[in-house]
Image 1: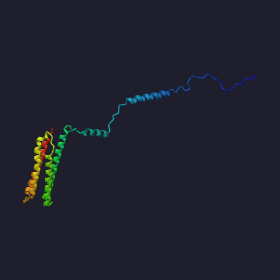
Image 2 (image 1 turned 180 degrees about the horizontal axis):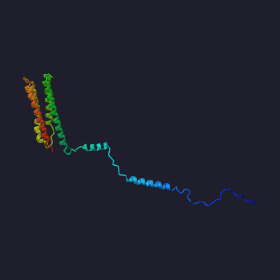
Image 3 (image 1 turned 135 degrees about the vertical axis):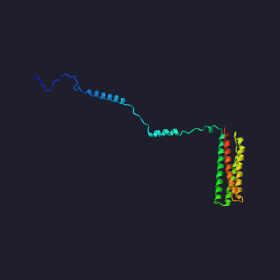
Amino acid sequence: MIKPADSDAPKLTSVSKEDPKPGRWILPIVITALIGFTYVFVNALPAADVTPPATAARHATTTTTTTIPQTTTSTTLPIEVRAFLQELDRFENMASDLQSELEDVNTKWENRDILFSAADTGFSEVREDAQDLANQIAAASVPDPFTTAWPDTVAASKDLVAQLQTVIDGLRAPDDGTLRRAAVDSYSATSAAFTKQLDVVRGLTP
């Protein structure tokens, strides 16, 4: 019986339980230590001061300066009173326009920029506009408590018409224009008195 020849292969031995690379567990420990150190260092840093942008500061300033005050007085008045006060403003604007028209015609005639007929027509048209204003004031619906001062207002508007007639008479007078000039000055005073009377009426607003 032939025995098998001895083989050159190494004989099997039991597997070693020892780690062939005993230093490889050190790397995770080092990484963990670095992460922990970084966390502690970052938390120890002081908080950074955050400065708001200049545009934000400008917007903040703008919003504080554009606050619109509330006008509660006018909105709490009765509707008819508010409507009447608006009419007073309209009457005053009409009187102001009359003053401007009169001065325009008078200046043009004084400088002889227009003919006598044009000056006469111009003054007459101003008188007609004043009569229209007086008619509107006389027909106005006046609520309480303004009724007590309204008769004087009607009379003041009629004075405008009468004084404008005086201006026309002065233009037509055979003089050097003295009567006309005096009548124009008197009309200015009459117009100022009318505006003052409207202020008296406004003063009765509850």
